[in-house]
Image (cartoon, rainbow over all chains, first blue to last red; front, side, top):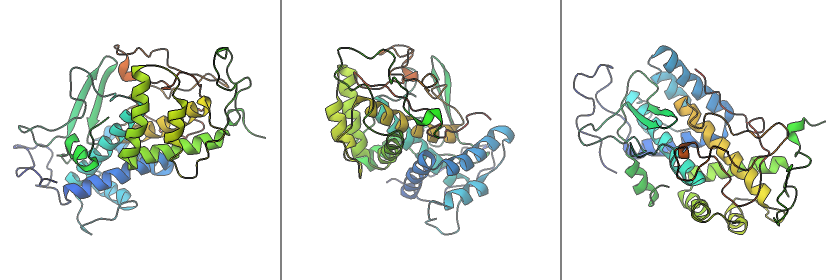
Length: 169
Length: 168
């Protein structure tokens, strides 16, 4: 897997995010897959995670520590002590991608796709890290928003194509 | 005494297709369908090769709507400990909907947004086969909620699979 973008945080970043992730891309992908599995079939875990997500949408705060504690319940920290807002953003992004890819295979298409977007919320060469992507549809706009006041993701859908050896759906 | 939602509706379908060879009721118990759907959601997330096998049948149905219960049975039969002897199109519908609800829960927990707008529950103590909003290739495609098989109806609801609350 490729390294993170050399300039990870955009110029004039308004969020006060740290300079770079501390987890590797591979570790974030692996953790995201585990997170997705727990969210799907462990209702109590899903409720606890969703509670933090709701806190962000209500208050817009920095929940990095709380997310880290929750994720640590199901994913061993590969770097023992380090976990920052970018690590959370990338794990969150990986969980979202794996869930949407699986959902697409269940129903036969990607519900986030319409002619106005690529359906996967990928960063670009010009904007190699993101905090948000909007997916306009005929039923309103679906959102992919890192539910934390800090942190950017740099995981692409093609990272999962490579990991899985097959494209989605 | 089980709550009404724990038992299959009786009759299972108010107007079963007289030309269908699908049995009138599911072959599996409700709990079996719920748990197999949970297992399938986990397998879809954990094993992209399995997910691709399931997708291949869904794609075949989308290309040519028909009854693909034999192919689905082969794929779902790969789930550990799953006996397919009594499996029929209603069981597929219930397993598919259980997996759908489990994956939707993950998505709602991550995004705080239910992209389907609801949980696709059937009428109280009833069954449903397809979402009336579904239009192949049409503007409602992103609300796609359908059992990808020619026959079979589901009765499972969010009470069977405790769902996330999308509200802030």
